[in-house]
Image (cartoon, rainbow, N blue to C red; front, top):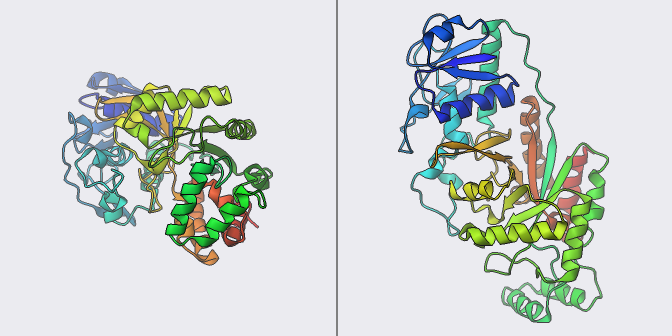
Amino acid sequence: MILIHTPIVKPLIIFVFRHFFQHRLGQEVSFTSDVSAFVAHSGPKMSYGDVPLGNEFFIAANGLLTEQGVSPVDITVFQWEGMPAFFATSAKSQLPFDFFAASFYLMSRYEEYMPYVPDDLGRFKAEQSLANNHNFLDLPLIDMWFERFVAAWTDFFELPPFIQQVSTTELVVEIPQLYAYKYKTLFRSFFEGLYDIGRLRFAQTFDRLMVVLRFREDPRIGLIEQMEAFRSTAVSFRFFALFTALGVHDKSLSVFSKKHQQELKSLSDYAPTAPLASFESTQKKQQLKEDINRFSGLIHRPIKAIRQHKLALRFPDTYRDYASLGIKHDYSMQYPYISGFRASTAHPFLFFDLGEEHQTPLTIHPICLSESHIRAQQYARKMRQLFTGYQSRLQKLHAPMLVALTNESFNNRSKNATFLDTLKKLLIHE
C-alpha cells in the first residue's frame, strides 16, 4: 500500500491521488496527516504539501486542492521536457510543477465552472479553454505528464517498469435520427421537403420523394450490415440513439412508431445501445428521467450509459443529473467543432462534482475525434493524417482512442462513398 502524507486530507486530494495510484497504477493508496504514522510506514510513500518531511518522494502543492469552493485561478504556462505545464513549484519537488493539482484542474473542467461567453446553444466554446489558448488541445497532456511521473516514481523506489494496458479503439455511433426519410408522417415529410426546397437542396428533395414513394431505399438503411465490417477487427462499437419527443433541436423519429421501436430494439440486440440524451432534457431533469425510462422499457435493459445530444454539457448540472439517475458511463466529453481532448486525457475518469465537493460514480469516457472533424478535412489524405496522428500518439501512451461517428457516416449514397471508404480503411487497417 502507498501512503500519502498531506497536512489536510481533502476530498479533492483523495479523488485525484486515487485516480492515478488506484485506477491507473492499480495500487492501493491511503492518506494521513499524522507525521509519526508516515515516518513509520515501510512501504512506498510520498508527501504532498509545502515542504518535504525528510528525504521521501515529495511533490510540492500549489494549494488548489485544499481550497474551498471555486474561484478564479491565475495560471502561467511554461515548457517542461517539451510539454506545457503549469502550477510551478519549488526545486525540492520531484516534479517542477504540481502534477496532481494541474491534472485535477483539467479533468474536473474547473474552468467551465467559471463565468464564460456561451455559444448559441449555451455551450462552453473550445476557443475559450486553457488548452486551446496554449496549443495543447490535441495532446492528452495529463497522460503525458503521468508517464513522466511514473518514471520518476519507479526510479525513486527502484520498482519494476509499470505494465500498461494495450491501446484500444472504440466507435461511438450517434443516431439522432435513425432514417433520413422513412417512418415519418406525410405532414412532416411535406414540411421538411419544403424546407429543403427553400434551402435549394433539390437533390435531397428528389431523394426524399423517391424514398417516400418507395422507389429507393433510405440512404441510412443497413447500419448493422455496414458495422459487420468491424466484427473481425479489434474495433468495438456502441450506439446512442435519440428516442424522445420532437423538438427544436431534437429531430428524433416518433417514439410512437412501432417500426421505429422495433428497429431500435434490433440495434440494441446487436451491440450496446443507450440513449442520446435530448437537448431539451438539459433544462428539464424530469424529461431526462422520462426519456431514460422510456428507452429502458424499449430495450428491456437498465440504462447505464449515455451521450448528450449536441454535446450541451453544463457543469456540474448535466453530470450531476446523470449520476443521480443511476447512469454509470458518459460519452460526451469532447468539443463539437474542434478535435482534441476537452479534459486533456484519453483515459476514463470518475466525475468529481466541484459544486458539492464529492466524487460521483459516473465514469467519463473522453472522445478525441468525431465525424465532423474528419469530414472537415475534405480530402482522404488529410483525413488519414488527422486520424493516424491521434492514433499513433495514443498508441505510444497505451491510451484508448474513442471516435464519435453518426449513422450518417454509413450513408450508402455515392456522395458519401469517399468518406466511408476512407473510414473503413482507417479502422480496418487496409
